[in-house]
Every structure is written in C-alpha cells, then in structure tokens.
Length: 483
Image (cartoon, rainbow, N blue to C red; front, top):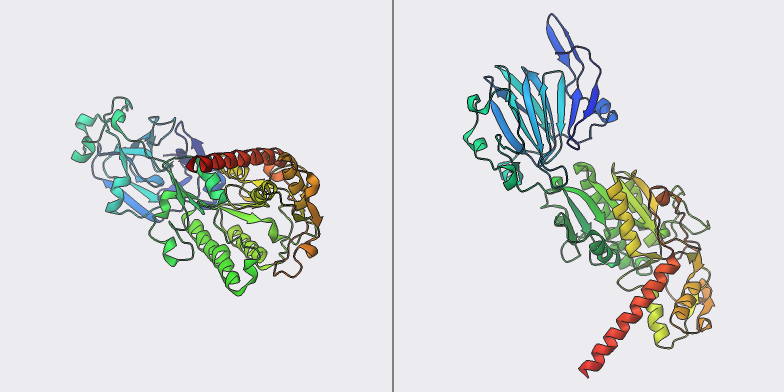
C-alpha cells in the first residue's frame, strides 16, 4: 500500500471506467483514507453520479471470485482490507463492446465503474473486503436489467491470478453466457414530451426509431395530471426533452387560458425540473422570444427577461425553474414553423385562395424551422455542450411578418403587393389580443460557437413552400381521383 500519494484519476481503455489513486495516511495504529470525497474527485473528472446505497462484500478466503456482472447503475468500488484482482468488460452497446481492462487493487485505489460495464473481483488474500457505492437502490426486480458474461469467456481471455478451477465460484456465475451470446446493455433512455406538436414531430424525424428514445404526446402522458410523474424508473433515463407547451398567446390572457398556461408552462416544468435534479437527468426545455419585451433590436442569452403578457410571463418563470437544475439546456426560439398550424402554412393557403391579406409590418424577427431546432437540440446533447441558455432560430436578416408574407407570395408566383403591411395596433384593433414584442430577433453567436450553424431562414422558407405546394397537388389529385 502506498501512503500519502496524491489523489489522482486515470482513464482506462474502457470509456468512462476510471481508476482513482486514494491518499492513505498511516502510522503504527493503522491507516485512514477519504474513501469518497465528492468535491475533490469531481474536480478531477469523476462523474457526479449521486450514490444512494453503500454495500460491503466480505470474502473469507483468497480465490473468492464474483462476476462478471454489468449492473444498470454506476458503482464506485474500493478495498477496505486485503487485495483484489478486478476485471472489467464493456458490455454496453457501441464500438467498445467487449473491451477488457484488468488491475490489482488495494486500499490505496478505487475504481469508478459506469453503468453497463461488467465487473468481476477475485480476492487475493484471506479476509478481503471491498465496499461500493451505487446510484440506485438494489431490488430483486432489477435483476432483469443486468447483463452477464461468463468468467471463463475465451474472447475476453482474462488471466486470473488464481485459476478459476481453483477459485471459489457460485454456480450461477459459472452459467453465464459467452460474449457472442451476450445482449449488450442499451443506453439510458431519452423521453420526448410534446411529441405530437410541430417540434415533437421534427424530433421524431431527427432522433429516428432508436429503442432508447420514447415519444410521449398528450394522450400518452398528460402533464396536467399528477400521475404523469410517477410510475417510471427515472434512473433508467438520461434526458428529458420538453417540447410540450401552452402556446395560445391570446388565449393565455383569458382566466381559463391563464390557468392552463401556468399549469403546463410552469407547474409541469417545475415537476420535470424536480425529477431532473433528483435523478441527475439532462433537461432540455424550449423557451420563447416572448420572455422579452422586444425593446432591444437583438436579444442575447444574458439579457434580463421582461415579458409583456401572460404567455411570456409563464415562459420566463419556466426558464427560471429550469435554470435551477444542474444539467439543463434552455433553447430560446421564435416564430416556429413545422408540421402543423403556423404562419407560413396559413399564408400559403391564402395565396392559393387568391386572398390579399393585411399582415403586421412592425414586428421583426426570424423564422425557426423545426427541423433545425430539432437538429440543434440533438447537437447540444451529442456533443456534450456546456449547459445553459442558447438562442436558436434560423439565420439571416431580421424581417417583419409582412416581409415574410410577401416572400411567400413571390415564391408562389403571386404578386408580392397582394400583401398589405399594417401596424400591430391596426391589425388588432377591436380584438382581445396579448401584447407582442416588437423585436424578436435572437443573437446566434453562442449556438454557433458550440458548433451548430442554423440554415438561412430564406432557404428553409423556399423549401417549406415548395413542399406545401407538392402536398396540395397530391391532395388535389387524390380528390379528383375519388370524384
């Protein structure tokens, strides 16, 4: 055993498997060590894995061998007395599946074993004891989530200091499958809420059909109901993407709408933030330009919120709640366009119907197409970008709603001057309407510095209008065929 060595963390050839040198202080009375020191270890790269249970394994005689078990939680293992030989095999889905690492450990070292990495320990001395912290509570029902590998697997080819024929093994461990027959442990799950909305549909396209991604629309999971947050083993998730929201800006100004806006946009988000904090999940939350009053022509992520109406107030309140969670991405966006009811689709319909609309010309911003918003979310998650607030819209010049409407008409071969620009006050005269920010343009420097470059809004608009025209033609052809 080494005394007074500095605390150090060493990477291994298995991603996420760490060996930690522990400072041990000893004299003629024995020795003392800080077995788990969260602050110091986090600073050196050990994950903040949130242990909830401490177990001790005592091995009466040398040669006692246990494993190879891959559990559905993280472990921090250290020796209390004696010495052990440890063998770890990556049993997770991915390119590192089957990778092996071995080491001999005494009280002066520990190892962090990430979820899905199989571990086995062989005691090298009589009276060996080791302790391990885990970040989920053990239950017999969790056994079906384990992945096992045979200790004698020829592919892993582990050299056991005490040959297995001479070691003490359980009958169960001897019956575990060889590597070729092992089903890899899947990654932790991602839950997408609001999966039936415009952004939710784009996330379905972006994230595909991976078995570790769950999509929940309102019929699957109603965030207004208390039982929406129970009945799940949240420790089997890594991420919640909240694409659900109450977005009826004008309706939020009514008594019923106000309650609905706060229930979905604030109360539900508070529940999600509590879960994310407790279980150390990443919470992705979609926010809005309506958190600002629009007095600034360009809004950065650091600007103080100043919402004008109930909808904006509820979104600003949700942002404050999400900011309290350790692992969060807040995506502020504006003027969203996707597969659903939206401004562009409405203008296409009016143009095709020969309508000459009056459109607001004193509100300015950028369109956000959901395919780019979904891609930006995936980029932040896949690259492990720094947590925080990110503005994300499509790129290009700031334009008014009337400017965009004119461009749509032009793309459809209609006269651009069919669109008449009017002020916000003129457009909403005599109507019950929420206040709107005059300027909704969001600064995009931070998301670009994270390596994501949104496509120009003009390019996406042309593509969207083209696809809308194609869809109209298909529907017309089908209608004609039926008649």
